[in-house]
Amino acid sequence: MFKPREQLMQHGAASLTDEQLAAVILRVGNQQATVQEVAQSLLKQYPDFRDLEQASLTELVRLTGIGPVKAMELQAICELSHRLQMQRTIRFGVIASSQMVGQRMIDLLAGETQEQLLVVLLDVKNQVIQIKQIYIGTLNSSVAHPREIFKLAVQYSAAKFILVHNHPSGQLTPSTQDIAFTKRVTGCGELMGITCLDHLIIGSQHYLSLREEGYLTD
Image (tube, rainbow, N blue to C red; front, side, top):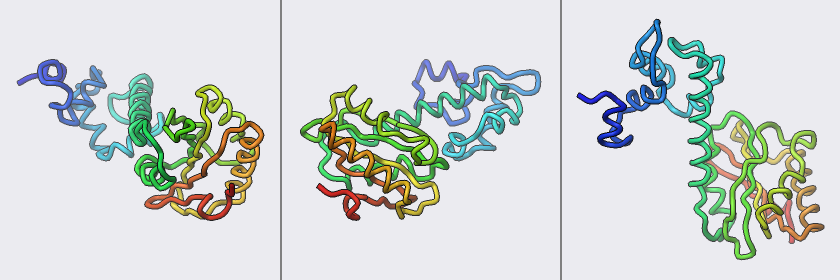
């Protein structure tokens, strides 16, 4: 029977079980446990990979056989996976409507425990140029600033963009800060000739378009 690394070399990563993949990532065990035992412990604690993605360094190092270095490596892999999913969420093609973005962003952001602000950058034909995370935190003027959005828009020669941020509570009602920030960004866009098409709020199962709700007008 192949060991996990040997099986990966012979048959590819898709042939490995979750436990075997974890063992490959963890590489070696320690005096407390073998790498297989560490992998088993990890998956027993986090059978749902979404929970593993949300685990803190403090929580990870409590597990048998996982020290600070392995905990940081696991977090780095989870973040790479998250960014890959972000790129796959909206294919680099034409965005026909806010609904197209909203439905796909639900899959990406629903279940996240922190607010995230993303910007979908578009060209003059509504082709997706890039999707970038602006920040993680609370949408207020001390954290989020239009300059970060327009810096990226200029960098990628975007003509338009759509803002997207999630409400971890699942509630879709825009806050006073959400509305004020949207109007501030829209005003900056008018001055720079870069249009904010919409601002979407993502809940647990649905999304809300600030344009459709009348907070954004042409």
